[in-house]
Image 1: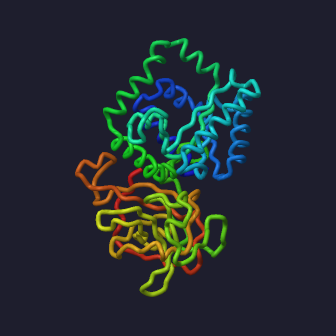
Image 2 (image 1 turned 90 degrees about the vertical axis):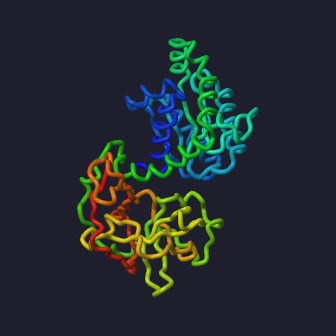
Image 3 (image 1 turned 90 degrees about the horizontal axis):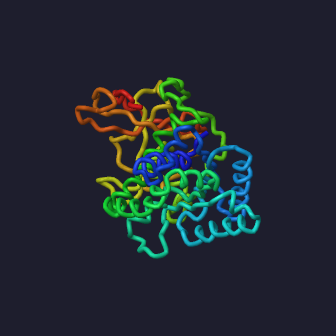
Length: 355
């Protein structure tokens, strides 16, 4: 199953690295399926190091053409420590006489060149939605450079000029959009295949038995966002169970970082358009106000929360020619929802889903 972090990294490769031609050699490798994504949730550097070594062994054995090790919870806000970690991997390769076989490149949300200011747009050549270690074969790099030496020489300078022309704000929006839209891809990219979202079961049980897998991590009723692991909170993607202060019932919602009417992080309640849809087709409930984070009771497993987009307003086709907006549609059909959760039904919200 593709994790949100892995999907975000793949989307970043497609939209930013390939879309902006930051690496002219990335597209053919990607198109022939030569990029492997290895996701780890570890926060421990030694464990991450072991993961990198394992992937180097697999790469050496022909497991893939190139590998991106995605570390969604390690060094998330600490680029300096991440950079030191990458240097440690490089030193290991030198000590083991493997530096003529492999090359390591680090990508990080806060990547910064040593001679550039943090706000310089050129830093985005190595900025990614999550920390990632790119493992490459030296032989493949040498072949690419030898085939196009002038291109290889010009790429760093052309990237710098282009990124500065686009600007840091534009690039930041691109990365933010990658993390937002990776949720929509999670319905289509699973088990290394593109799956049509409509092929999923049309109806799922409305409420599942209370069975706590690793998806439910209970938190205190007054837990502040700053005290909780930031890796759980993804704007428009992280779904939760919360307690409704008006009547004490437990309901479903999604984390929203901010909106036009609410500048602070909050929970937007979810509802269904028909009871037969159950938790397989949930939408943001626009008829009730947002809920404070203090009401959150548990966070649902992001691995099995699938997000797609549907067209609101009854417009026609993927192009949305009449200007109707799209809205997120949340499928919690594979999640174990607590038995005491109440699902709100808003009849009539059944416009066509857009894939």
